[in-house]
Image (tube, rainbow, N blue to C red; front, top):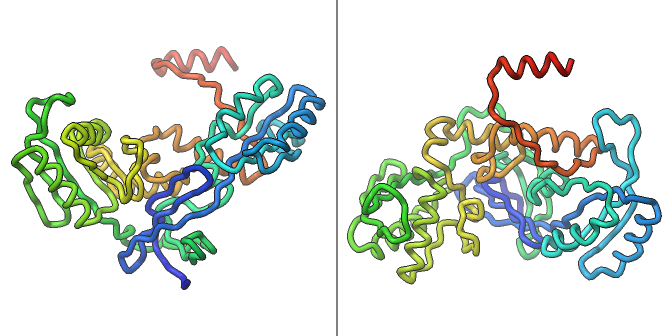
Length: 335
């Protein structure tokens, strides 16, 4: 069907399919699908438990393969550990199956990674926002994709950005507070949308459809988008802010576009967003919300995965705020 060149502007996983949104060099949007088979590793409590799990899961309707693999499980380990690798046909049965194996499992691995991380780390191996060359096969499924080096290009990808601000009756968001007007800006075009609330929301929706932005920026973006959807529902409107409809109403699930908070854009800009995505191998909608520590952690997990490690399950350890003096004292005590 011919090769295309462009930038990966969004990626997400649903069920057994990973979807990539590509902004082509000639300013078109491609939606490309790829097969995704979710999996995780477990260390059985005993070898007999492992064999029992393997034999039972052969008949499971959503398990496509169960096999023993050797993986490093700690940074200190010199030898790999034998783990049971369980591969499913979809994300739908993933959590329930994991929970059902708890009485046999001593440790879980790779279960703390997001599905989109697993797909990018193990299958795609190309960071979102990178420039690629690809070829589509039947039904828009990905046939081939390779990374193109754009590290020395002066200008960032030609992503189109829409800025808007919602004006309410009052200063705090509340589902009972109607939207009075919206100030929007895309390129050099600035527009104030006012009038009846239903007309204001419909005009904003039309503005998004007509201009087809790749990035949408607004103050307090999560709260703002949630309020817009809530008000639209009350008015009987089907407001779609992504490039296609999504059941979830949070910006995290906006498909084909990225919703950014205005504070993030003012502090980091587009260059900062691209750096976060390419370093962490995360889609922009996640990279813009994660802390620096989680961004670094994502990159470490990617590198370890490629080195033959299985990633231990997160224990949920939290650090409280301490002074530098207290941290120094604790370090000296540990030493």
